Image (tube, rainbow, N blue to C red):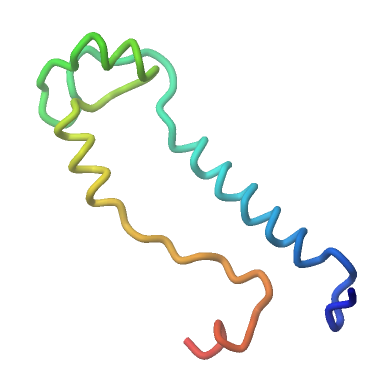
Length: 88
């Protein structure tokens, strides 16, 4: 089915690109490397179980929960450039 000026399958490609971008962003934000023994935020010891389960952990549970709660909402990327996105 043709979609105006776009080629067949273009919408599917846009969706796949958006998913691929988001997965890359998530992978880049995951901790890596050696886990720390003490939290870099408050200095409290990080439990051994947490250090073994999450490679590269740098925050204690309490500090991580605060950081997760303070995460900013991200706006989605409108790859189609619809009129709605131009009205903002």
